Length: 337
Image (cartoon, rainbow, N blue to C red; front, top):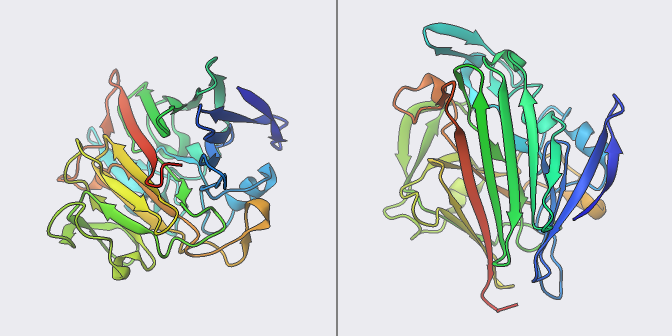
């Protein structure tokens, strides 16, 4: 396991980077700030880095203070997506959360998982790493102290596996996801020509504040049969309702280099986001200028605002129970690289 100092936070704590590798020459680099996936390099002659990110810790820190943070590669929690007006009820009690997106709560607030320093435990095999984080009681207004572990594994079948678990000292709500921006042509390209398919026929209707209304909109007759149309890809920030959790739930396919990414998860939704909110001329790794179609996120999660919609899947984590998010990103090359 290769590890080294990546930078230092304002309070003096050190941030480390870690590299996982498999026998095929595929590698993944993580940093302990935000449990960020900094890069993922596909095997082959070109050594494509297919994840958006930064070369310096300072750039990650600055980006998280932007008006619309990109959340490059980070874990998102305690609650992914928006919670309307930053309020919810649980066990007959009303809770007020921090409001960091206008009058609403987004991606866990100002002390979210994305801004936390996670403690890392690299495994001796060099193909797995576990991050750990404790979110204290009342962080951003949430009940319960939540203890999280996140294990990433890089298999010799070119799979990046994510296993996230959490327990809470009191009943609470939780909805965790990952915010990796993928581009199978390399992080310097556009995803415009890359094909997206989903194991979903409906997505959540939303209002002008991107809050689910509670209704569903049909876009396809059959799961995985239709490519995501242009009208849904432009400014895409949609939550798709997974039709079958036992099957591949999403795919991203490059039109010419043979690479495709298959996504499988135990979560009820796939929130797809194309970087439409990225600031113009945002400089990423290797000085690349990122733009609105530099990458696409497949955020496997529960429904946004599930705490305020009774007919959505429950997001309640009871004391003594274990929350778990298992997601696999499987990379296959049809040209047999």
